[in-house]
Amino acid sequence: MISHILPGGSRVSSPFATKIQGPVAVIGDVHGQVEPLLAVLDQLRALPDFEQRWIVFIGDFVDRGTDPKATIDIYLDLAKQHPRTTAVMGNHELVMGAALGWLPLPASTDLAQKWIEFYDSESTFESYGVAHGDLAALSNAIPQAHREWLINLPWVVEHPRCLFVHAGLDPNSPFALQLRILQQRDFTLNRPPWLCSKTFVDTDPPLDCPVPVASGHVRVPSVQLRPKRILCDTSGGTDGPLSCVLLPERQVISSAGPAQPATFETGGHKSGWWKLWG
Figure 1 (cartoon, rainbow, N blue to C red):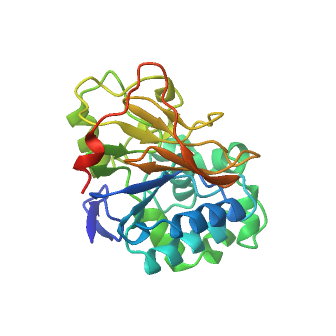
Figure 2 (cartoon, rainbow, N blue to C red):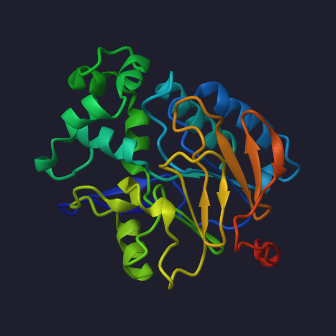
């Protein structure tokens, strides 16, 4: 169990693994898309090394898609059946948790109204059988297991050969400083950029970052595999397929079809670091 310290000194235990090793399957932003998620998971279960492979969800389970509640149920069931399952928090979980008063973000940000108006949250309310905007009713309707899941989501998952964080890293800040903030989950920040910034998608991590960074958050037409960045949100919770990247193979599994060889952007090259994943 991982412990997080919230502002005020209270400590909560987290069931999420935050330091992993071995082969990984990283799944892009789910956003309530049940059928695409089940299609990806079916393909993962067919892999010969499925039992040894970590499944990492890159955040944004809620909002937009048809059934956010069901996608959380699927995650919780998967984690019981396949303990090598973990996730990071997306900006949609962050704002939802703050809107419900479960996460201690600064009160001045009025995230409750922003979540209701600007985050395509209608489907989240509907999936729990609650009228859109009725925060008190939603809080009461959400099962305790879902509440504990949301408030405990880590901001980062570390692997010796990759870092998993919802939006990416700031290219202009020291890596060690950013990693420390991510590990501690600094809820005093108004909009934590590692969960919320849309600019990191175009930049590599800081020069002192020792590993590639995998993220979602910003929809891309197809999975991007750069030497220092992996971008895997190909649906945005709308009409695109849900994608999953196998590491170290750098192959793509899509809800629209089976695993295919990955392509590298200009300047990328296949390295021998797959031999080090163990």
